[in-house]
Image (cartoon, rainbow, N blue to C red; front, side):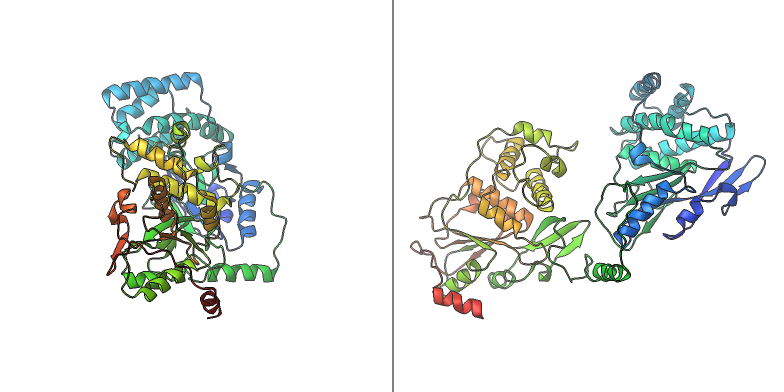
Length: 536
């Protein structure tokens, strides 16, 4: 039987979607009812970002759910995850057969039909329409996954599909005449794969479906990248994902305030190069280690982050051009050598290390904490880390906590520290994880002063081999700080190995100077010299 119900996505803008949703199907553009066929227009879009005015955006969200004329379900909060035991047993039987026989889409659909897992509406046209939409759903899932319906995520997706078909779509269809009024759905924020596929199915059926995400994440990107069934509409700005408004915003912005906010967002957008203090405090810092010459090192180290090459802000991440270099030996021109060191170490945001080791080794067994924070891909989940009771840095600003946790996740996932003989990957990752839980207080203060678009904090290490030995724990902290975007410069007048013992040299620049010196004690700049530098 051919599909006799044909939903057509309507064209609309950010300004008129509510007007369309208020209209019953017969009053919408494209509505055509014949003896055996029904064509109607519906609203389907991914609404990414926010208005320039946050209040306006929150009002729009609130009104979409509480308007008397728009009867939309806030599905992300209403989602009923229970399932009837009999239906659960039915879908499990089908999945067992599928595991043994690798069912085709048609056969899988036939089994769903046979177990009566597709809602049995009184209107047979509607029933066959639901069935055909489910076939498209299965075909899309198969096409989007390398292993098709043998993918590990299919079992979860189809079980969720069955439960939500009956928990939501079935009662919606029984409450309303689908021929005159389509169910209306609002989704706000993130979604799992099975949730995204259920939304996709509702769009195929012809429901009005609007997906809002203030951060600009497109949860249907991987399913409907060509925007065949739903369009993408971009708001002029982006914001943080906050809880859906329970009440209508009561604070009203003045005209002048709204104008100033709009000017501010235009002038200080991610790509504007005009950045406010702490504009990116809730972004994730990601290091882009620059490769430089010896002379460039001392030029760039004075520059603000956003002035340096390869600085970029995108997808809530700040890509920070960072320096990581080791200076071996000492210049014949001793004055120039010490002038450069003193210029760097005297900077306000510089921390100088002259005794080694400068970190403590953590011997606690954190295996349980480590494994508990892993996601399904075996990668540390930053959100899980910062919300754990063992997280050491809860007093730090929330954005910085997430930035540190994200860096910990990255530097554990792809370790740059050399493994010990017979040390397995997980043992190395556990070592790095443990050391990341013991950031020294002076380093913590350095991170707290880091405004990602502005002056880059610096860790300057002066190692003569007479002032102690750099440890593996020191190297682990150095690797973590480089991951966050801190500038790191190691001066080693004797020209001996220290960081190289623990880290491959491809991760940092090495600059060899003309001579080596075994008796070169660190020289502080004179008080007079410091005063002169501050004046000029």
